[in-house]
Image 1: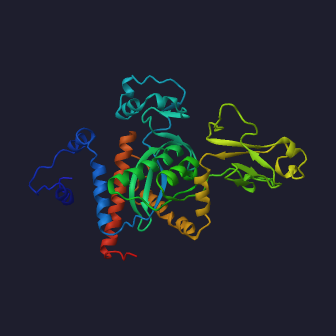
Image 2: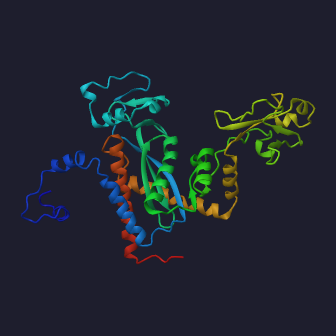
Image 3: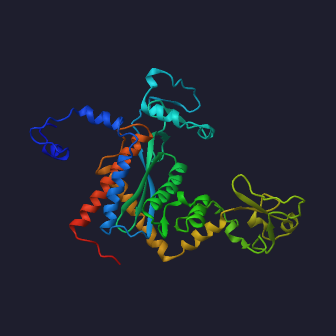
Length: 375
């Protein structure tokens, strides 16, 4: 390190200057710089340079997540419902303190994880990529599809719900920072759940180029709910035989919403209509009547379905590969397939710095080729 000219140049040290002890940097990183948001500032400055160079169009964004192994041993874990004495001196680490500080009533009410790491409790036990399970975090990227520049990065535990919710954080943060909102958002089926589509369409006014998460298709040859016609004015379905399905068949003194805990409204047919229907065997052979669960966000789901039938959607599916290529580069070239630091703050530091490096690489590549031709 004392003979490394690049190191001295970066630290603005002459050949005669004394090189600080390596522990100085470590202490500053863990102490003075811990709450400074320095890495986020660096990421934003690099992103701003990419935008100034014309590498960001701001029309189409893509979102995805990739699982990165945590610095946590499989052997240093306990069952999620096993009590742990966190006051033990051996467990008094920064990662454990972060975990305990983040616990609140809402967190305690969540479903307990299958296994809990004693060295990095915020990491999530997962077997998502197939193979043996391990503790991991997810790095979530929001990219501009024009040149694959990373617009934002957000760490989460390796859990699909947290990954999807991070999209809201990244889009809102980027809009607040740069006053830019995309016209379309590209994602895989995981982002096609009804509440997420409603947020994209109704709250953000963004086109969802996302496959709808739909479990209505049946494995046998019986009628799926897609074969039933929805009448918006009458607020009822019509089955293939022309009979109605309604959320209520009699008036109640007190008005009811009929919304279930799953944010759906159940529409049912009349048993008398179904008893003599010649299509009953193809519709629901094992029950007395047919019912359909309609999401309260069905309007947003229909917007996504209509977009999925367009040529623009097919182009978006191809553009989504750019974010997957960034994850491949992250793991194979930058070698970030396992974290070196623990806790959510450690994951934040490593993921943010890695994303800044990837943007710098993209900026250097296009700067050497001259400014891109804007359409």
